[in-house]
Image (cartoon, rainbow, N blue to C red; front, side, top):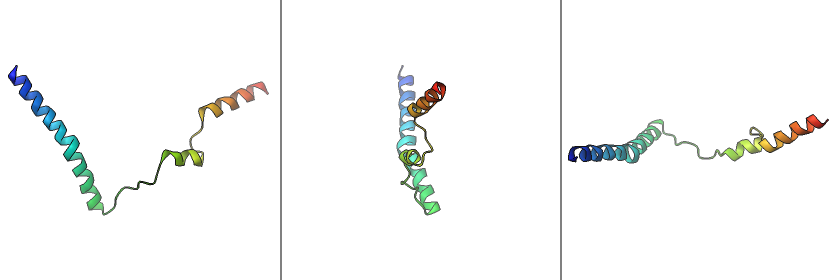
Length: 69
């Protein structure tokens, strides 16, 4: 049983290393290498305002109106 606990502990420590250290370090390394940080100005709200995303309720109403005519 001790072997299983030690294996589980090593795996959880490895996962914590990857999530908390390796991934952020990789992102920072790429940002420094490219000398550019990712843009933080885009939001999904921009697509809604541009009309790229349709409201499902409006779409259903237009289909219903077309059927009535």
